Length: 336
Image (cartoon, rainbow, N blue to C red; front, side, top):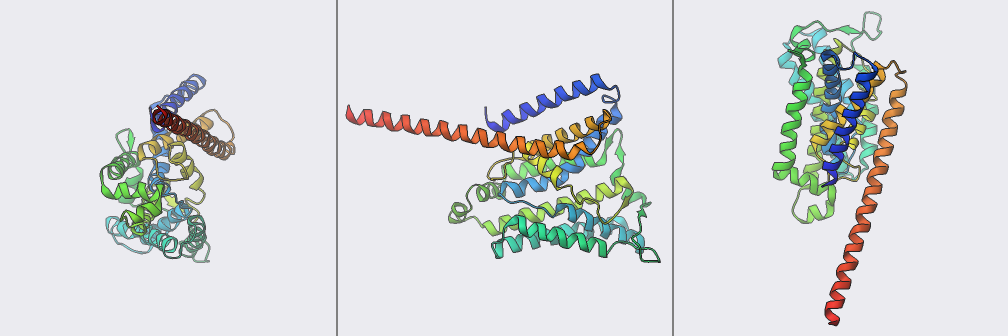
């Protein structure tokens, strides 16, 4: 059994065990409303995490996604507050924020060979300031908390029957992204770029285009998440989305995409996002202080990385033993 399959089975088993414990501890947990809320929260993190997964498969990281959420939501709120442009016309312009930011991240990373963490962290700071600059303000100049009333925009935060629209969008996006990764040449190029960029370039892969492409996709996913988050909250402030990076990283790492790149997939990320939402929901349902959540998320990331390093060490040791046995067998054959 592969490591990815084993990890998924363990995660699903843990989710079932935690769910059973929470259902026993509190009757609210198994209600339809609460289960749909878990999926909704997992979907909001998951949309961000899908784009982040592709970045991490290339052995990169994108610390600007939270700030992209903030700027995109401010752009949308400005359109809603100061224009009469229909939502379906200005939404593509809002999503274009992610395209621009992703293109800039990819450009500086590939053109100047700068570390991904530094570039995207700097972009995070720039975008955080930009979100404050373009925020809607009242007559005295103070930032205004805009109450969103447009029914078309609020539809994105609504439900189709018992299921939230964001959950449907999340699953559709996950399906097509997984298909892209596993069934297209571009998807293969992403894996090759993350596994060994030098070898990928020698084999004819345009690693620059691949890296820029995954950062653009990550930015678009962040802008898309901004629409769903702000429509669900029915408002937006300049700090919306800032700080969500830890949850996204946790979901991707739990799902089986390591920081070293070259492996991972979207279905693992889907399970990781739902698992994280389940834990957070359990903390809320049990009445535990919400301040414990960052501790839990940070602890999960550390434990997952430790487990990955441990497994990698075992795999390398097993490969070395196999190589020694093969050499010994070849030497014995030559001697005979």
